[in-house]
Length: 155
Length: 136
Image 1 (cartoon, one colour):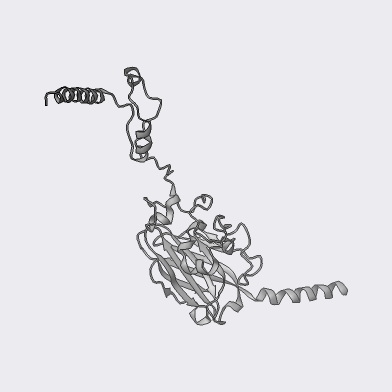
Image 2 (cartoon, helix red, strand yellow):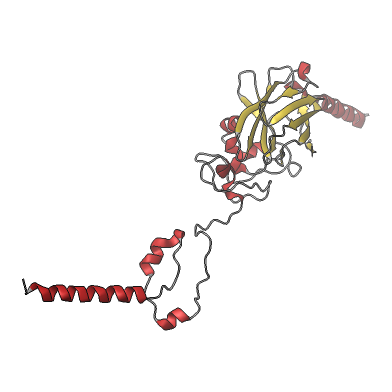
């Protein structure tokens, strides 16, 4: 009997924790800006505008991160902030789909997703896209300013 | 007045001899924009035997700025800081953090790629979950 109780207690403790995370998909459609691959930094700020953490970095050379102005100002360019969440830069006209297991508490709590972008021989665009992380915004494409055409968050 | 004539004649003779010798001397190596000063400092008049012998130095047709012409100039060149070309090798190896801005934190090390280590413990990710990414 005791082993069963132990197993039940263990599984009960695990289930709430697992229920707190949900796969969230970020689909970014790049505009046809006619340049080379874009570096993109995805990061989250809280209701006060304070940096909470990074969600994704498109582009693997840390020396170029200074051109992602908002992210760089928040992190000091610390590449450890994007360890394990870094992929290739994204070409013009391409789309990037990222699926992350994120805490449910990220939504409807005043958090905001920011995407900074930069492209060689072109421009640095801090906050190319900003989206408040609310349930209402799920599934709705949000237009970017320059390199990002649209960004859609879905669960 | 007559006493100055020999001096003038001597000066004219000397100057014509020097100019003639210089114009007849061969030039032993070309000068390049990148090392003009050094070449001038070390230039000498070659003997006919030296001029006829093949040079041990390779002929340098390009600049001499030791630029390896890879993508080190990167964003700096793209955005007009100091580069001179603009190709972007997409996510090839970092070059030891060159061009790190002053005060940058951990700039010299490239971040770990997705899938190789767990996402950072910043409270946003479920523990142990690895991101999935697709680009089309």
